[in-house]
Length: 285
Image (cartoon, rainbow, N blue to C red):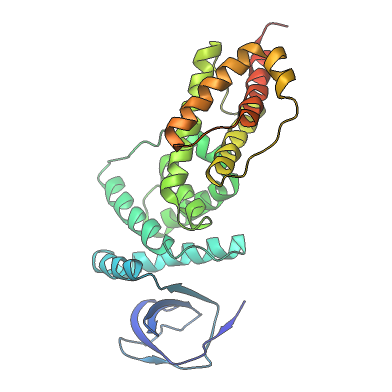
C-alpha cells in the first residue's frame, strides 16, 4: 500500500537506498520506498507528495531518545537490514506494529549478533512454550532470522528465534514485552507443576499440551483484563474430577500470587477439565 507524504520532511539519516529516517512535526519517521535514499544526505528535503511504501512513526519522547542513542551504537547497514525485516513482518501481518519494536528488536538483535560472533549463545528456556503459544509470530521470526543470517553470515539459533518471536508478539500488543515474557514463564511453571502433581511427563509436541498452554494464555489475559468467564459445570467438575480440581486450585493460587489478583472458581473449573484430559491420556487403558 502506497502512502503520500502530506508535507515536506527533513532527512536525518540514510540507512540504505530504500530506507531513510526523517523528522517532521517533532516526530521521527522511517520511510520505505525504492530508491528514496539514493544519493541523499543529511538535511535534504523529501518533498510533499512523495509516494512511499510504508511510514513508521516514532513519537514517544523516550522512544525517540532511545532510538537516537541506538543509532549511535548500531551500524547503519545492520539497522537498515533490521528495518527491512520489521517492514516485511508488518506487511505479512497486515498490521501496524508498536513503535517500540524499532528499539527493542533492533537493540536485541545487535547485541545478540555480537554475542554469537563471540560464541556466547544465551539459552531460551521457554522456546517450546513460545512456539506453541505464538505460532504465527514464530514463523515470522524464523523467516526473519533466516534472512538476517543470509545477510550477515551469522547463524541465528532457535533460542534467538524465540526471543524474536516475543518481540513480534509484543509489537502486536502495544509493546507489552514484559507481560509476554511473564506469561511464558507462568505457562512453563504451571505445566511443570501439573507434571509433578500427576507424576507424568507431558510431550511438548502433543495436541493436549498445545491446548492446555493456549487455555492458560487466554485465562491469564482474561484475568488481567478482568473479563471473567462463566462455567455452568463447576459443581459437576468439582465432584467428578476431584484430583484434577485440587491441582487446579493450587494452580489458581500460583496465578493469584504472580498476577496479584483473585482467580474466580469458573477458571479453576476450566483448568481442572484440561488437567483431567492429561491425567486420562496417560493412564493405562
